[in-house]
Length: 398
Image (cartoon, rainbow, N blue to C red):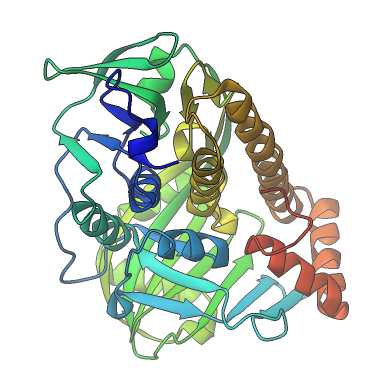
């Protein structure tokens, strides 16, 4: 439904999105590209062009996510992204191993790795080209109240806006979710992930790999040229101790712990760490309100699906809005909740299973090894797994 068909003068926008990160900006671009009047509320500045060394925050975009972003007319810069065509999964002692190939799975590639800031900047560049999207920066929600045909959003800059639907895409600590009175469940894995960007002697090419150890996975995400993003999962205290190492000591620790295929390191570019926790909103919707992305769910990052399922939320919600007469129609919001909760709950269960299978007690780890062996021996199973991970499985809930 186009803006001209929806506007009645009773609201400022068809849809207001709180949070201008990757998921919120992607939804704004998709709806704005279709002609809806969209207000995008962002607490910080508009993003600036990426330059210099690669940022620590790297995400994977699978086939469905890429299609959703391209449907908004957004162009992604190839020079700061890296396609990957193989995923190599193994355990530390070599008893379990499986290599997944995009070609064998009926795809050209599995997707791309891209800096979060590069993706966000590209989306905002597209938004600035769309006359039906208005950006409100340096402001945050103070209150929200639902009415019969719209919902009001009071901002801390003195403005009060109204829309048929307000969407919370403001992250794990969502203010809009709190204002709507939606609670969350939490789980602490008592693990910490250290992210280390490195420059390597060997080019990293198109293979992403993950090695499971009893204390957590070691992962390598390829970046263009001789660059890679390493993710080192371990117990809280062990990771905090590792953070205290200087660059030379950290290089030595990486070369000792990570597989030899990484090659020698030229330098440590940047490093950071974060705790591993799971969070899930008790509901995704309210009256003329919906939650997407981390505002609705935070999953274990070992499968690299956190951003993808957030973009799938946005994709599903966008299609329901585009096909409907009223963006905030409660029946349509219930469809969104049903479809995405089933899919997201399945992803949470899958990542939890991987975590416990490969880092749990020895009998569980042996079962994890067996699952890799089975995957390697049955190509059809591998193909189905990869298609589902890319949102291409026809049996997958959208």
